Image 1 (cartoon, rainbow, N blue to C red):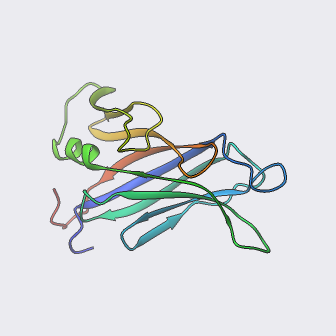
Image 2: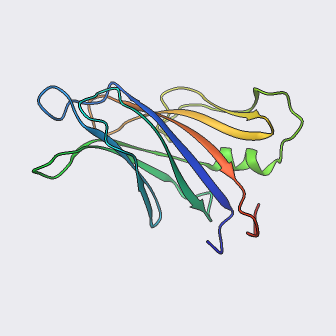
Length: 165
């Protein structure tokens, strides 16, 4: 934590149209990895459109490190099945946070991030200023699977006493 710039709160909202890995459904959960950090959501039983609404927090020391997201189907008697993966870059979000935007009207779009071959975005993602805080909503299309998306929201928290931005 001594080299941390701040904390990235990832609100894992929901999965949409996830792949079937059990007979007719799945028991999905999400794992977020960045460097040596690894966090996971709760398991939602028998649901291809799960509502996790879990907050996972990463300590950020290098904003250029990609964040990896993996979705799994929880199994009791065998290894958990893979249900796809995605990765995302917080570079544009971090740049908006560094601007220290205050006094902007709520809902002001600071930056738009377009889907491309270099990211897993399913649609345009907006970095927005609300109450002086910067947030980014994103819909990630899962790779290495037949279908599925995961919706996230990013929020930044400064660490008191850290080297900061």
